[in-house]
Image (tube, rainbow, N blue to C red; front, top):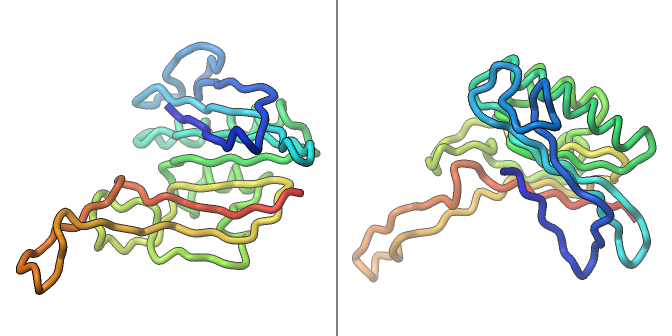
Amino acid sequence: STPVMWKTDRFEVMESGHFWLSETPDTSSIGFGGQHYRVCSWVRLKNKATGTEFLYFNTHLDHKGVVAREEGAKLLIKKINEMCGDKARVILSGDFNTNQNSVPYGIITSVMADAYEASPVKYAPAGTFNNFNAKRSKKDRIDHVFVKGFDVKRYGILTNIYWSEPNTEASGKNGKIHLPSDHYPVQVWLDFD
């Protein structure tokens, strides 16, 4: 599942849907030699205050299939071009299971900007995949936000942790570090009005 959430007091849904990352995108299917069903959810939103519209796509590429990721990236761009045309404002985000030096990344950035690269302000102390290990220090970003028609103001990989118990000398307890997910959240500030 690749849900998209928005502030209902700020945005109105104009249309929405999904497609599978496969040779038959309109039918529930595993495609391109992948291991699992992979889908892209999308929504066209309208800013209630300004009337400005944009499309948001969220996806999750295959974790094992190299060809599945490459073909999935090609299909994403094809569908975005079909649905949006040249002038639309578009956001594409998700777990791409591939880093910023890969072929799928290159396919997508040939027509969209990586919000990380476009941002003048970056907070990225680690890569986006942590495998539930707070000490993991790889800089690979496999979770991406790509944009078209937006001005990127800030980008951040939120590396927050929490403790199972207080980790203080006064309590005499050694707390255990927990992470909310095996991926760190990515937050991007965009200007589009």
